[in-house]
Length: 342
Image (cartoon, rainbow, N blue to C red; front, top):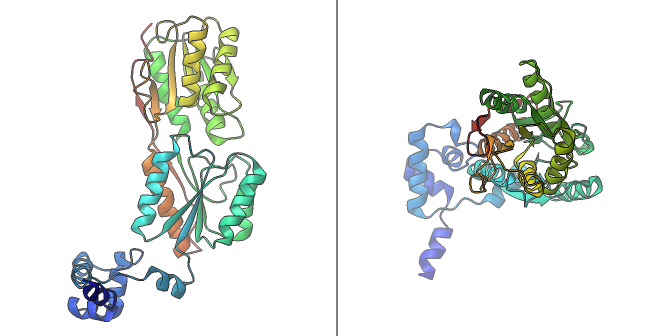
């Protein structure tokens, strides 16, 4: 057994190429996830089959030394415990893994100094690129990535200047879907729990809600602004909202955590959802279909978002002159039991 393992480790690229009937350079491209798209499917399959049969294993370390790349990508998250980021991260790691890249995940929180320290640590590890899920509308960390020259893509949130690539959901369209749904159910007194305005998701969703209501000749029954996208902030914001707009029949929350906090606030006030007030969330986080009542929400394509962010980043890594691209994904309304007809 030991002899056979030693033989497999000694298999060379040249032997694989000979077995597949191709040149060594062709075999090298076929076995490199970042280059195999340059070849036909039949050639790639033939080389891969030969490599598997002979027990050949590509030396990623040697390849990185030749290209002066670490084949590492840093992903910065504001809160790893927030289940919204799990499918985004899944899409990122899936797409990067297919291209033979590994991921270093940093839970950097929201404090600027802490974010900057971990950013510098990732640069010290010579990451080939960064994916940031942390961006604010005016973000000093984005400024630092531009200064450092490291390829960078934003995911889920964007900055105002559009200076780096980004993949986001159409927040305005998501709020239009929520408002149209409630109006179709007969609601006219629609209130809003907004997210923090320094984040694009908070700012754009509030603007989208106001624009959609205005198209029907309506104003928000009231708006309260949460200090963070958290359940507790949603509870506090909803309590304030109930005081400001006692006649509101529906609440649109800027994300699902805020909506869950609103559930708690209604219970504290002896109110029922959707009997007294209908609630719509935003994100379609895992398990929001399991709470009582199951939450009507705007679904964001998080895994696709992650894959697209990884694809944009790989393009930048391969070609520094790649133009800045912003991808906007279409959301979908998921109707459950937290909304009812008046």
